[in-house]
Length: 227
Image 1 (tube, helix red, strand yellow):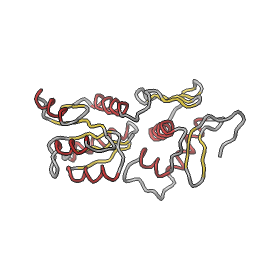
Image 2: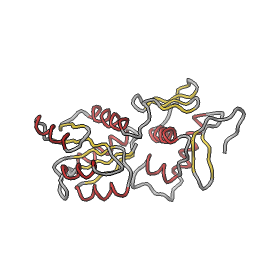
Image 3: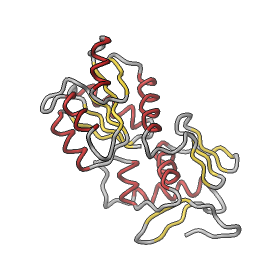
Image 4: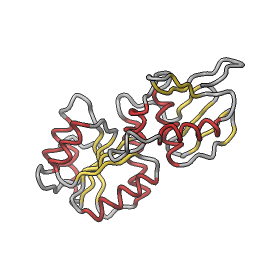
C-alpha cells in the first residue's frame, strides 16, 4: 500500500512517515499543497492523509482536486478542526474519512487500511492465491495453514504480489508500491527481498520470475520448479 502524507508540521509528518512505514506501508510526504499536487501527478497512491490548513494550495482545494481525478485516491482528512461543522465541510469536499488531532495512532492505521479496502479496485479483505493467504488488517500470512514469519517489507511485498496476481509486477512496480520515492532503482533491494520471501514460502515455488517482465505469484503446478 502506498500512502501520501500531506502535513506542513514537519515533526508530525516525520512521526507519521516513520510509524506508517513500520506498518509496512510505502509512505511519501509533502509539506505543502503544491508539493502534494506534484507528487499526485507523478505517483499512484492508495490513500492520502491530508491536513486541511496547508500553505501553497489549501487542503480544501487539494481535496477537491483529488476527488475530481480519474484515478480516484481515498482521502483521510487529519486536522485540528474538530467541530461538527468542520467534519461536515470536510466530508462535503469529498474526503472519505475525517480524523481530528490529537489522534490515537492505531486508530489512524486502521482507518487508512479500511479506506484502502474501499477503493473501487480494492480486493477482498483476505487475499488468497493457491495455498497462500494474507490478511492485511490482522497482519497475518499463511501457506497451507503454516504461519509465515515475515519482516515488514517481506509482508508488504507478498501483499503487492497477491493483489496483482496473476499479473506480473516489475521490480520498478514493486519499488513504487512497497518502498517509497527515495528507493534507489539501481539497487538489488527487490531481488534480495524476493529471495528471502521465496525461502520463507518454501516448496513448491510460488513466485515466478520472467527476465525483463517481473515477478508474479501463481498456483504452482504439481512438481513444478522455480526460477
